[in-house]
Image 1 (cartoon, rainbow, N blue to C red):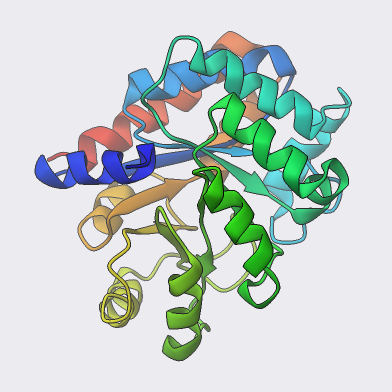
Image 2: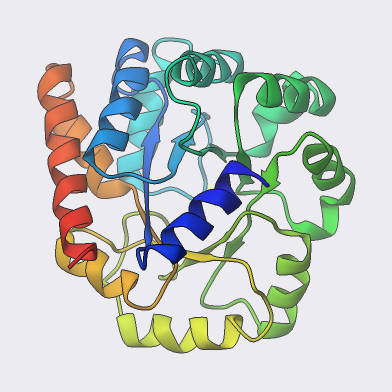
Length: 267
């Protein structure tokens, strides 16, 4: 059983929902990432999505684009992100870590090399934004042979028929994007999301995490009432940006948001 599957099963047994924060590796500087990962777990995170910096993050809005720019100033590479996961695993062997990013860095490293290195580092899942399932069969098989879950995005415009094909290739969980647009955009319509999830549950038994538009405890709790997991990114990255010159304050600010969300979700 994968760490991700075990995490969701344990949460379900306890009547709780997964809190899944996203942060960009190396933002605002590489030395902050691993301590922040540990801080997130202490604040109530169940799974960590770790963004791999890339120069053309087409699915992300300005907030995360700027985070990637801050990380890339330090010439951060995919190999460096894997090293961060390895260091995290020295003292945390339980919390699942998902790498979220784009295909180019993986392709440049080489699929086999990446899959082996990710397994060795302790990565649990990979979410590759620009890899459609129609082109992913060989890669998914490669990842899953190493025990790496392949996580896919589903959007409000994804038809149920296409969602069924995507979910058939997915493992770990699926990530439902609650809004049309890039990260950090729009206002959350919980009723619309609930209606969409009702349909998705007819075609998959995988846990469904919902992201985009979650900004505070109230929105986190609302999404937790209808989903298996709450994915939060832009509001955390905004806190890092606001305190980019003060890493300790940045970590504290991010964790304050996570604690508020965890508390609201657990009521």
